[in-house]
Amino acid sequence: MDDAELVQRCLDGDLTAFDELVRRYRDRIYGLALHLLGDADWAEDLAQDAFLRAFTRLSLFDPKRGSFSAWLMTITTRLCLNALERRNAITFVPLEQDETEDESDLPSALTLPDPESEWWAKERKRQVRQALAQLPPYQRAALLLRYGEGLSVAEIADALGVPTGTVKAWLFRGREALRRHFKKVGLL
Amino acid sequence: MNEECRRWRQTLHEWLDGDADEETALLAQAHWQTCPDCQRVVAEWQSIGEWLVDALPSKVSPQWERRWHQRRQTLSSPILPWQGLAVSWLLTIVGCVAAIQLVDWSLTSFAQRLSVWLTSAVSFPTVPAEWVRQVWDWLLRSV
Image 1: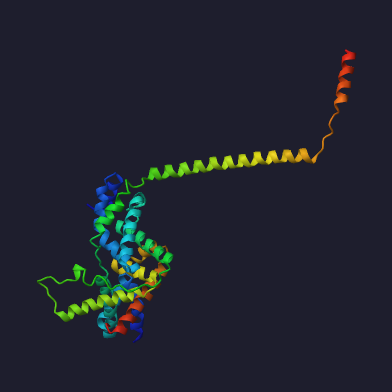
Image 2: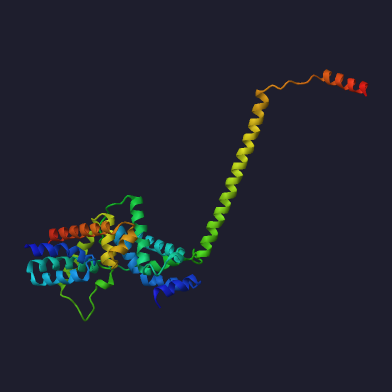
C-alpha cells in the first residue's frame, strides 16, 4: 500500500495506518533530525514532534504537490531549524555515536571486510559527520535533504522557504567546505 | 585546464544538483570521460556525494516505541478540513460579537460621561417654586 493510500485511510479514521507511516519513516526522520541537531535525545523528541505535527495537519497534505516523505522532511527540517534558532545553537558537538550501535555498520558473516578497510569506512563516516557539524544549519539542511533524502533543488527550496538560487548557493558552499575538510584530513 | 575543461566544469555543480538538462549533462559527461584532469575532479565530487549518502542513515533508539506510544495517546484523530473550517468560522463569529459588544460599551460609557459633563458645565436656570405656585393660582382663578 502506498503512502497516499495510508494517508487517506488515516483521514478516514484508521489510526493504524498512521502507525505504519511512522514505522516506514522513523529512521529517516530521526536521521535527518540527528544530523541537523547533533543530539540523539533532542533529535528523537523533535522527530516525534514532526510526526505529531504531520498527524494533526494530515488533511493539508496534497499528494499532487509532492510525496508524503518530502512533506514529512519539510516539517522535520523546519522544526529542527526553528529549534536551533531558538536555542541559538549554531554550532554543536560533532556526532560520535552510532559507531558501535549502528547495525548497518556491522559486516555480515559472508562479507567480512579486512580490518583496515573497515576502520577506514568508520573513520570516513566520522569525518563526514564532523564536517557536516561544522557547517551553518541551512547549508547542512540543504546537503542532508539533497544527499540523504534525494530531494530536488526545487523541493529543498520549498521545504526551506527560500528561492532555488539560494539552495544552489548553499549546496555549492556546503560541498566546497566538505571538500576542503576532506583534503585537510587526507581523505581526498 | 583548457577552455573546454573550464566550460564543462562550470556545469559540474548544476549536474551534481540534478539541475542540468539532459543534453548538457550528456555533453559534459562525454568531455569528462575523455579528459583525465576533469575525470579526477568529477570522481572527487562523486566520492563526496557517496560518502554523504553512506554516512547519513541512522536508526532510532530502542526507547523510541515506548516514547512514541506515550505521546501518541494524546492523539484521537487528525483535524479534517471541515473541522478546521468550522473552528475558523466559530472564532470569526466570537470575534465579531466581542468587537460589537466592546464598541457598544464604549459608546454607552462615552454618552454617560458626556451627559454628566454637560450637566455640570452648563448651569440651567431653575424655576423658583413660588413662580410655579403663582402661575397655578392664576390659572385656577381664570378658569
